[in-house]
Length: 293
Image 1 (cartoon, helix red, strand yellow):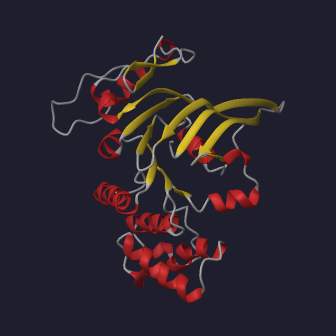
Image 2 (cartoon, rainbow, N blue to C red; image 1 turned 90 degrees about the vertical axis):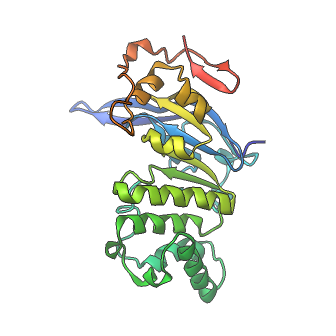
Image 3 (cartoon, rainbow, N blue to C red; image 1 turned 45 degrees about the vertical axis):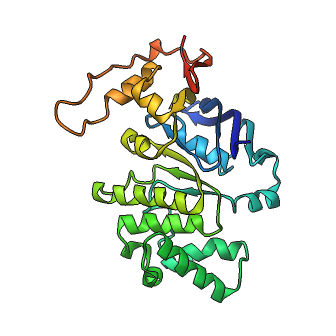
């Protein structure tokens, strides 16, 4: 049984536009289905506005899905009441994209990591402080940084701090939403390697949301490609990168910078009208799904 099983998930946003207050609907997530096995990393890729972050937030009910089903370890997350959802969130956590805005600038680093422990009434104050020091060391930070404010930390340190906060309650499933996008290139590899190391040490399951396909290729077991709220291709990472079947996937891959000059593949232009989003997601080879007309 997969740890995470999503079926026909839909999220519709409604907003008013113009002087007439006309209501416009946007299907940010449009009938998405996939699963993630225990200990697996599923990379979710697509351009900005494709619905990746909305999907991740729906899984944790940080925003409420419009319809569909989300099962975590066999239980229907969308059927949970407030108290049951609070318990479930101990095992499902999120690392947000921007380490500058996702941390309370008025709280000390130690208090930021301790906050989920206090909310869930885990241990006494001394035990929580010891746990904070343990978590900071786990993510490669000096426990002495606990007294500092976020503005006194570098971008990489802030993202490590956010990761320590996410790990405070010993989750089994972590959604990493563009975890290195806001960081300098020199720091990105450090954070990526930390994510891989923590997965191996703690047995974590990841949904890695990213638009950097090189990052996804490095750490993901399988890759799901999202376009306009729908998955257009899902396969093992090597299958997606070696034999992409959907024209949108091929266009994404053609835009990835080559490690050495002259090795970049020919650019593939994606023409949206060529993509039949109503075509079924079918198995084009074993374990390789694509929405091909």
